[in-house]
Image 1: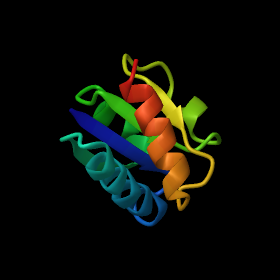
Image 2: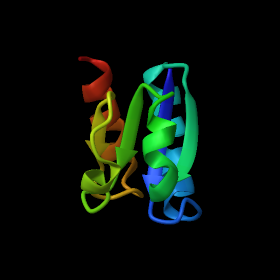
Image 3: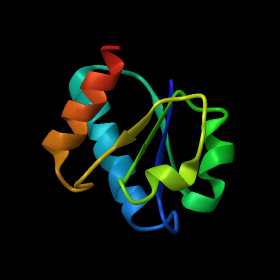
Length: 91
């Protein structure tokens, strides 16, 4: 499984989200690769991913992709990241 963490520039907040996704995956016992990406490369990165996680502001900018796009309201809220990831993995 491959998950893309997307922010505007692909440097700060996406790396923070990436780390929180990795922690959530460990807690959930799921093996996956997580990659940080900026919004301009997100659509291309999504082509090889199983899931995209990003903010509400950026989700529409990703456009139509063939994988679920999960909106995270607070990238530093580990409980939210874990809950939303778990909910998506249960589908």
